[in-house]
Every structure is written in C-alpha cells, then in structure tokens.
Image (cartoon, rainbow, N blue to C red; front, top):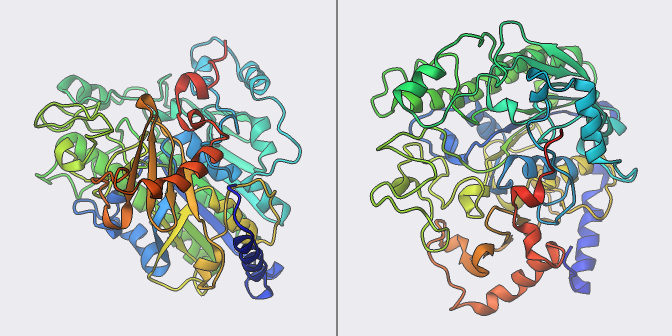
Amino acid sequence: MHLKNKLILILTILAVAGCSSKKDKIEEKGKPNVILIYADDLGRGLLSTEGQKIIKTPNIDGLAREGMRFENAYGAMLCAPARASLITGYHDAHGNRWKITSGNAYSNISKGKMGQEEIESKLNEQLGETPIEEVFLAEIFKSTGYVTGEIGKLEWGFSATDKQMQRHGWDYYYGFLDHERCHGFYPPFLFENGKLIEIEGNTRADSGKSTELETEETYNERWNMEGKTTYSQNLFLEKIIGFIRKNKDRPFFLYHPTQLPHGPVAIPEVHEEFVNDERLTQIEKEYASMVKMLDDHVGNIMNELKTLGIDDNTMVIFTSDNGHEIYYSQEGRILKPVRNMETGEFFDNIDTKFYSGIAGDVFDGNDGMAGIKRSNWEGGVRVPLIVRWPGKIKPGATSNTLVANYDFMATMAHLLDYKVPEAKDGVSYLPELLGQKGRSQEYVVYSSFIGPAIVTHDGWKLRYFAPKDIFQLYFLPNDYREECNIITQKKEKAEEPKSILIEECGGDLNNGWFTYDRNILPSIK
C-alpha cells in the first residue's frame, strides 16, 4: 500500500490494536453463522431501499431496515475481478495478482470434445500451483471452526476446478464451475463437490441462453421451452436451504453468488406485480421479475433462519459484484452498445457518458450515477452493501464510510480473530458495524475496460482514461453524477491520488486497464 507518514502509521497501529480488544472478539460458543448473498450485475438503483420506483424489494429492504446499509461501497467493474477481489482480499488493479481462465471450458462436455477430467487437468495446468502462504476467504472460516459452502456461480472463474475449490477452503459447493454457461438458466449439468450432476429435462448445450436484443424472433426463441425444464436458481435455493438445515447446529459460512439478475433475460414466468404494468415492455417485465425472484429468495433464506431459530445468531450480508448492466435492449427503447437514444450518439466516456435518462433505462439501475458495468464511472462500480446482525448492528443504520469488496476478507478475519497476510489490501469495517472507532479505508482502487480509478475517503475521485492517456478529477460529495471535471482548476488535488494510483497499479497504469487479451487466459484445446 501507499507509504504514509509516521504519525498516520502510529495511529493506524493503535487503531488496529484497539479493534482487537476483547469486547469485539467472538467467543467460540458465540460464533455467528455468516451468509453472503452476492448479486450478479445488480446496480444499487434496482433496490427499493435505494429509491427504485418500479420494482419492490421488501425482503432486501428488510435487511437494511434491521441492519446497516453503506452509502459508499465499491465492487469492481466486471464479474471475475470482483469475485477474485472478494475471495482474495486484493484490489483488481495490481496486474497478474490472479489468473482468470476462459469461461467456456466445460461447454466442451456438451460438445463431446472433452470430458471433465481432461478439462480440469488442462485448467489446473494453466492455473499452476497456488503459493502455500496465500490465504482465501473460505479458508479463514474453515481454519476457525466453520463449515464452508458455496452455491451458485462458483469462484471467480471464468472456469474453476475441483482442485481450486478445495484449495480455496470450500467444504461443500454446488453450481456452475464456468461463467459462460451460466449466462443461461437451464444447464444440462452442474457440479457438486467434484461430481458432474446431470439436470433432468435440461438438454440445451448453451443452458438455454437467449439473445439480448428484443424482437419477435428473440421473444419466441426465449419462450421456446423445449429442453428447458429446471431453472437453475430454484436448484440453488433448494441446496441453500438444505445446507442451512444440515449445519444449523454448528457455525457455518455460506456464500451464495447468484446468477440474478445477470442476463440474457430468462425467467420461468413474469411476476404478477408486472403482468399488467403499462410502464414496461415485455422484456422489461421479465427482467424486473428476475430482480423480484432474487428478493423472494432472500426472503426464503431469512424465513428458514427464523424457522430454525438461528436468525439472531446469523450475520447476513447482501451486496453485488459490480454496477448495473442493460439486458433488455429494444429498438426505440434502449440499445446496446448504449447510446443517447435521442441523438444516436455513442458515449465516448470522456465528455459524454451513460445516464439512465438519455440512454432510455426505465429502471435507472445505476441510481442516477454516470456509467454502467465495465466502466470506471461510479455507476459501474458502486454497489449496494447491507449487513444485518441482530443484537450487534444498530437497526436502520446508514454508514458513509468508504468500503470495498476486498475489505470483506479483512472484516471477517477481524470477526474471527484471524491474522491475514500484510500484503492484503483490505481494511476491516467490523468496528463500523459495531458502532466502535477503528481504522477505515483511506482510498479504494479499481480497474476497468477504460483504465483504473481511485476514490479517497473524503470524496476526491481521479479516473484515468487509458485509450487517450487522460486524467479527470471529480469531487463526489458535490458532484454525484460526475458532471464537472475540475482537474484544471484543482490540479494540486490530483497529485497525491495520481501518485497512489500509479503505485497501487505496480508502477504501470496499464495494470488497471482490463482487456480480454491481456487479462484472460486462452481457451483450452
């Protein structure tokens, strides 16, 4: 991390020491269960607790009402980097900190080209051996007496292996080992603790993936249910409930990286709340139903905890991997690549940028911010974060503390009195949850498809536009929509963030410029 002066270092050491006092350590008998629900491409504007006008999310709202919501929470700009940061405790702009495999590896099974054993062997060869000193999220829980489970869109991908899952500390897992097949919701097979599990009635090699641009033809294709019998998210919910019931008498960590509401759009039926909603097109109704199903499943999980009598001893965290994405494009409504629907102008990500109003997003999924998934605008990386822990977290609290997805490991390690390697980037926000004083992040760093960015604890944001070697500076407390680039007027304010950003990127800002060619390993053959 960036070198600080001696005074800050001393204060930091004292703060960390204070955070480790007996009063916030968890005694063995009182270890809380921990459930992390990780939404996929859910912009925070899609939650009614954040002001969503069309979709009601009462169960997620309930978590916020009974817990703490964070106003300044950051994920990443894309699925794999976000999940890797979460699981490893590093930000995603280091460069070569982890390996991301191609997402289509296991489709070779359906194509008859390779079997599971050969695929995993080739992937493991690409991944290489993980250093013995490396520590992963589930490993922390497992080493402190927890049973660990992951159900859904597994690991960071884009294709994982059983060897990798075991090394990362998972006692149990079920779901997709590859992230390309999970763009469909009717998989012919999933994986459970290393075994390929065929899903009866699902025969589509592409998992029933539909085409995004809405036309009469794509609508008919989407609703042709031949070979699409069992919806994956229903399978995941069943396994989640089973895992909770099986482990109700021992501390458990359950990580549920859901597919919802990542597209292309697919849902067994339109939710009754949207059937007659004249504000929405057909595909928008279906997308809204995906968000609604996510909320319903959160409710199912919470009801199960209460039924089993373990609700009060379970910390539930709800967040998302990255910002909003559009999966309901239609001529005359909203299109991809996103553009100004009045002028047809594509956003240049320097002077023009995505805003819901001019792009035609009826949901305002990025909550009025600029940008969407893949960008380094706030709408691409700011995410919802809600934590509920009865008796420990003040109900209805809102935090303005700066936090990142890579802080989650540090927070859980603090909770369990586990010492993580100093090289990790995360800072525990457990004191914030408990209403105590403690150290917090001075800045967060993240990559994007157009370059890295840094946001400081007092609201200064420096973004780098790599294609044209341009820096822009924004003061977010006064400029929520990132409309006023003030780098010319406040050049001195950019100097320290720029220095930190370069250092965090290992001396090369290109490490924070994500490209498929540079950051993703070749497909196995």
